[in-house]
Amino acid sequence: MNNQQPQATNFGYNLLRDHLLPTLLGKHEDDILYWLGKDMARNFPVLSLDELPAFFAEAGWGQLVIEKVVKQETHYTLHNSSLLEISGGSCSLEAGFLAEQYQKLNGYLTECYGQKMLKENHIHFIVKGDPKSLI
Image (cartoon, rainbow, N blue to C red; front, top):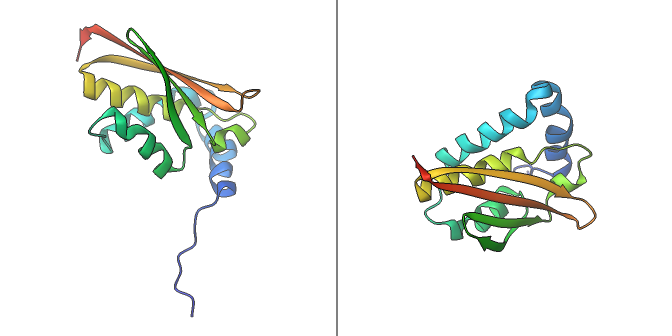
C-alpha cells in the first residue's frame, strides 16, 4: 500500500491563480490579493530581509533576487515563477507580502509594485518605503 501524500503541482496552482481567483475576486482581484499578501506576511514573518528569497522558494513562488537598492527603493526580480505561465495572473499577493515584511522590519510605511516582464521572463518588484511615515 502506498502511503505517500499527493504533491501539489504547478498545474493545480495555476488553475487556482488563473481561473478560480479571478472569477471569485472579480475586478477587485489585485487589491484583495495585495491585502492577503500583507496578512500572510503578518502570519509568516521573516526575521530579516535576507530570509525573503528562502521564503519565496519554499512557498513555490520562484527565485527572488535583489537587483539594486536606491535610497528608499529596493528592486527585486522573481525568476522561475509559475505566474509567468498564467495568461492574466496578478502578482499582487507577492507584492503585498514584500511590502508588509519590509514595513514590519523597518517600522515605516512601505508599498510594493510588481510587473510581469514577459520578454525578460521575470517579474520585477519595486519596494518603496517612507521613513517619515512611521508605523
